[in-house]
Length: 188
Image 1: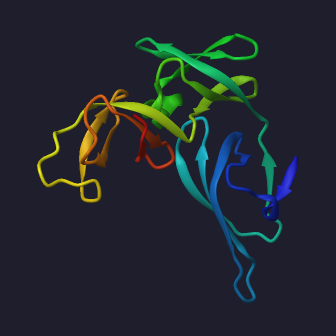
Image 2 (image 1 turned 90 degrees about the horizontal axis):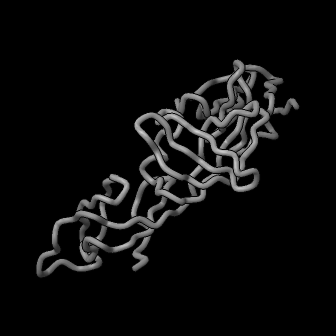
C-alpha cells in the first residue's frame, strides 16, 4: 500500500530499498518557488541503524512495510542467541545480539515483549515503555544528601548504568523509561 507524506506517523514502518524502516521523526519544508523537502529520521529494523534521509519531490510516496507484531516471552540466552516464546502459537524464535540491539539493557528473563516479524521472520523486539529493574550496585549516600539534590551512578541487574537519586540503595526496585534510559521512579 502506498502513502503520501501527509499520511506519515511516528512509529509507522515503511519499506525503502527492500528493507523495513521505522519512522522516528519527520518534517517537511516548503520554500518559495522550490519543491518541498521531506526530511525523515528513521531506524532500520534489520540492522538497527538510525539515519536521516531527505526526499526532494512534490509527490513523495512511501510503501508501508508488512510487519507483524506479536506478544512474546523472553526465555533465556546462550552465547549466540536470545530465545523468545510466541504467546499465541507457542513457537520459539531466536534472535542474535545485533538484532536485539539496545533492548538488551532492559531485558529480563520471563519479560513479555513485542516480537517484530518482517516477511514471516522475526527481526527485532520492542520492550515496554517502562520496566522495573533492581539496583545491584551504587555508592552510599552521605549525610547532608537530600532527595531533591544530586544524583549518583547505579548499576542495574541487566548491567545498565544510569544516574539515580541519592536515596536509592542496592536492592531497590526502580522504574526505568526505555525511551531515554533514565530513572523514572522508585517502586520498592
